[in-house]
Structures are given as C-alpha cells and as structure tokens.
Length: 221
Length: 353
Image 1 (tube, rainbow over the protein chains, first blue to last red):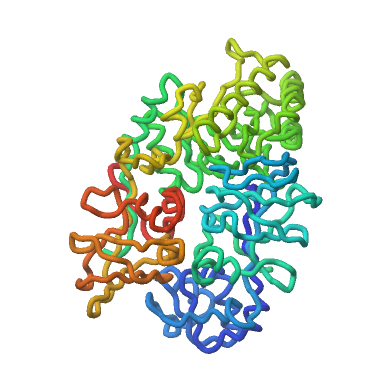
Image 2 (cartoon, each protein chain N blue to C red; image 1 turned 120 degrees about the horizontal axis):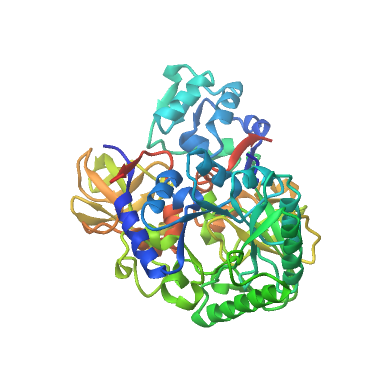
C-alpha cells in the first residue's frame, strides 16, 4: 500500500555512459544500486562477466541474460570498479537517495532538535522532518555534518539522525510538505554527492550505497 | 555453516516480561518498527504479544497492514505518514494513527473509511520532529473533538516522545505534556470514564527510570532488544539479554590474517576503522581478535585459524564475544544502529520459537 516515499533513483543511462568495461563488480546487490536494474544495463553496455556476492544475486544476473559461465561468485573481489557507479573521478553519479519531507515546523531561537538536543536553533527558523533514518542506511555519523537538497537549495542536517527520521534546518525557505529531500545525487543539479556523504560518514562510497536498506525502493530515473 | 544471524526469541520474551513488570500497572506497547529493530518484524511481534505486550508500535501504515495481513489482531500504532499514505486502508484495518497536525487530522477525518479513525494527538514537548507546537495544540484538539462528534474519528490517545537529553530536560518535557493534557481537558476531552484517551509519553528510558512518565502505556523499544538506553549501565546491568547473535565463518586464512564471510553490506560498521572509530573485535577460537579491515562482503581479522572455523561478531556476551553495545561504542554510535542495520541477505535463524 502507498506510504512514506523512500526512494533510490537509478540513472541507467549514466551507468552505461560511464563505461562499465568487460568485467563488472556487482557485489552487494550492485553496491545497493539494485542488481535487477543494473544487470540488464550492464549487458547493454557490453559487460561480459559479472561478479556477485551470493547465489541469489547470481540468479538475478542469469535471469537478466548473463550466461551461467559469465557470472562469478566472489566474496573477495578486489579493486571494485567505483567508476561504473560514478563514485570516483569524473564518472556520472548513478544513484540518488531521496526521502520525503513529512513535517514542517517553525521554532524559536534555542529550540533543541532530536535526541540529546545536540543542535539548538541559532535563530527563529523552520525545521523540516525527513522520513529516512539509520535503519534506511543513512549513517548516524552524518548527524550535524551532512547537507541535503530540497527544492533546489541545500540545507544542513541538524540534530541526531534517528532510526527512521532526521531534521533539516531550512531557515526561511518555502518548503512544501511532501517535497523530495535529496541526500545525494548529482552535483550538476546542485545536490550533494555520494562522495561528500562518504566523507561525512567515514566510509568508502561503495559501502555507503551498499548500506542502503531494502525498504528503500529502487527504480529507474 | 556460513554467516548467519540467530535470534533467541525466548531471550526477547524474557526482556519483554521484565519490562512489562516494571511498567505495570501501565500497559506495554512494543516497538517493532524498522523490521523489528533488524530482528524480523513478524516473529518479534508474535513473541512480544506472548510475553506481556498488548500492542505494537510500527512507525507507518504499510507496516501495520503487513502485520494485519499476517493475522495479528492486537492494537497497532502508526505515527509517521507521507503525502501518499493510504489512511482509508489503515483505518479500515483498525490501525491507531498518530496525528501531529491539522493537515493530517483532516486527511484522516475525510478518508472516507466506513468507521471512525482511532487517533492519538501528538504534542511536541521539545524534540522538534513532529507533534503539534503548543500554540497549534488547542486548534488540533478542538477539531479532533468536532470530527469525533461527527463519527469520523475517535480520540484514542494524547501522547509525546522524550528527547532523553538530561533528567532536567525530560522533567521539563513531562511538565509540557501535562500542560497539554490540561489544555485538552479544558477544551472538553474527557479525562475520566470509558471514553477518556490513553496518555502515553515514555519509551524505554523513561519507562524504566521515570515512573511519573508512564501514564497509561509505555512504548518500549531498544531495551527489549537487549541494548541499554542509558550511558551508565549496560543491558546486562539492567537484567536484559541480547536476542541477536551475528555469526561468521572463516573463508580464507593466510599468515596472521583471516577473512570472515560477512562485511559492511551485512551491517558491520566500517566506521570502526575511521577517524571516529576505535577499532573492533570478534570472538574467534575462544578469544577476542582485532578487526583489521571491513570490506563489503568480508572482514579481516588478525588471527590464525582454519577455513570453516566459526567466529561471533556480536551476541549476548556469554562466551566472551562482543555485544552490539560494544560495537556501538567502537563505531561512535548507539546499539540501535548496529541492530537496525543487521543484514537481511544472510539467513536469520529463530531459536526457541
């Protein structure tokens, strides 16, 4: 049934344009990009061999059209090709992580935000509640560090990230209830990048995307 | 055997029994959001209802519908809603709904369901997430009463959530909650008799340490999953036992380095080796060994072992293995995040069903 929107939009044109090469490392559900979307695009891009993490993912690759002999199960593949996913150098970003603004609230100066009140509003401001949290793979380490884009502008993530939600300080911006909040996507659209988020959360960008939970719906952009 | 997660449902039931005893005579609602804090929502929901909880907190309406579809007929509470949330389906499935604003109240009241919606009005007592601000509270209560008179809603609860910032902050929030309840009473919400709404404020932390915050019902979450909500005592100190054990197997051994068959995609936090981290350990061959790398599908530890040997990443601590609480400390986070991130791609095995 319809509920809160938690989405990862996958830009398959960008993936193909990045030139995934002959052998694609697609472990961990194509590093969280969704192997069911990535495997057919990889075939289209000329990938001849695909590396996956487990039997289930091998089945997904075979169902997408990879011959059984071209699917390799390998826990320890090294040198994962971050370029195919646009997560290194000048590749185009493939995955955008998008949450929904589910509440807006005007607060006075000094209003504490979220558990432990680790942020207090430095002035009267509007807080936007976004329905994604660490259970969705938004690492709690990003609390009071990260930036998130809403309606074409970028705002600081303030207070502690909770299991299912976090708060943005959007100042006096006119944000709509139900708006998309883009955690990371394409800097060319003014959105924060997965590389920035990887820095804020102290992990490899492929670990960041691979950690996006299954309750986030993957779909083609 | 390869990597797997074991869930000891009897440990979970014992935790719930102990918490329900602490809360009594207040009722116990068990939070099963985020797929039962990573333990699997349905088995956890059933176990909670077998051991002293009489209601379940699910976060959002689709999760409540999934429990109804599985045959759970207990009271269910959902309080975070999106623009596309199907309130009519939730009301017709008898799901209690948290309401933070007039916008939400009107969507629920006008949902066109064939029965009144059970609504719990939320006052913001300082967390500044959702919940009505004190200046918006009288209008929200008044309009809910009007919808109730028309048979479109039933005012089933008044509630809030604490920030756990400090005892003084929580005491201030308690006073704000009591003030909001008094405002509601002044507007005409009955505080006696069969039609009075449930009052609920406390989760694990206040449920255990703040008796004056228990009111009619405590929404227990993390403590039932064997993680302490406090900084000054761990779960075992509270008499709670962790139901989850994460196990791994050695898949390669070379010199003094051993690879185990799970990694960050299974929920092992890579930040233990980052600037905010302080290293990590697993139990292998009866002793603690240091984690030297966290990959996507594997972790490396400094040890000598044979392929097929078993390791415990975290568990209740019986055999000297680390707990999720210890991993949280190493990763600069809280145990809730360690549990909620536990893999859904490796097998979950339920013990003592």
